[in-house]
Image (cartoon, rainbow, N blue to C red; front, side, top):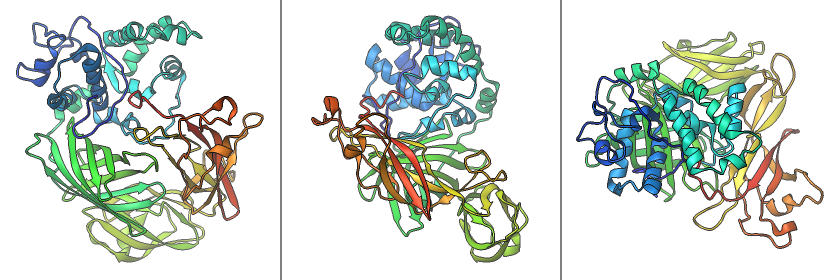
Length: 538
């Protein structure tokens, strides 16, 4: 199985077949000397204008081009050498990519941690698509493809040809009819020709990532961190290839150093693979907002037994001044708080230069200033308005910086349902879930559990496990119980059958994880499920 260079991960299969006609363009995307013309034109024949059949009717995320080319090698015997696999993905991602706006909609799908993200349909049309398609793969996978109407029809044909069992598997509907009826809606929702994409492509500029970058992020279970990237062009590896050194500094004093390589796809989509000082491996995927020279995305440990990941932003030194992060996230009324702002190219300021959008918040003292970090004391009056507030440091605005609340009325465990996976040997280590308990302040309606709740900072909760009774003689807790440190649950069972359990089932089941803090309690459901043997199918 092929891997990204330098990253190895595989996604699912959504295919393309041959169709007639080529969208009109002002240029030949893949000239005779291109890698794509050399490697793909044996099957994807060029028309008289030099446009390649099928390929030039579809746009995809980098991750989906990887999946499609993988399938071409595996099922269609594409003679593609290992050393040419990465250049092919880069070239496809450069010419037939998603725009940053389109990629933002599927960013949650591009990372490979044990994600707890839940896809939920927003309207009746999405409900139909979910019913017909999401049983086998994610909705985000569909959104990652932008096709002509003919190509959406051929994607349906691929399923009927390669996977005819879809008909009996989906016997609660006439899948052949329903999937045909969805072609037109899919072509309108996710079109190949998109004016926003065309405008972006026309205005896209080459980007050089070389330099120092300021980092700010949040790692569940560890808290906020700051740090730096030092990125250098890897001339030996080629265009848009980089050497990366990273240093993170956490609030508890921990320092994490790592180094490795990365690739910038489509002039905005960065993927990297880093080796940490403790020999563990980290991967990351980030998207660039070019006008600000700032990335946003996620990194994760390759081995997910501890579900280690971080949500992160980083901005280039010397670019437009900006604030990346502010913490703590919530400030209680009637108290003075030490607030930290992390950013890039921050100006030197006095207390009077820092202004909040809500009356009643005043900076009384600036204790630390610098180009990347500002620390100040903020007094919040007892009668200050509650809710989301922004902050302005000189001329630099940071909207939705933090929240103001009067009191903590409850706590809430997130995610609301966690999915852990049991291990099955060294090739399939256990996948844990990092839970976090956060404070909750009732909003203006005075009720907890409504849309106006204010979600507060994480709390230092005590954790325990309890049975989630779903049947008579429910014994899940007996086999799934283990210690829970700082909200992290890692299964101790394996994929093997347990002889004494009914039907000799493996160590899976549904239990509750419970957090307690200052006489407040909350719980989430925790599903421990079998090993994921085909993680490439998303």
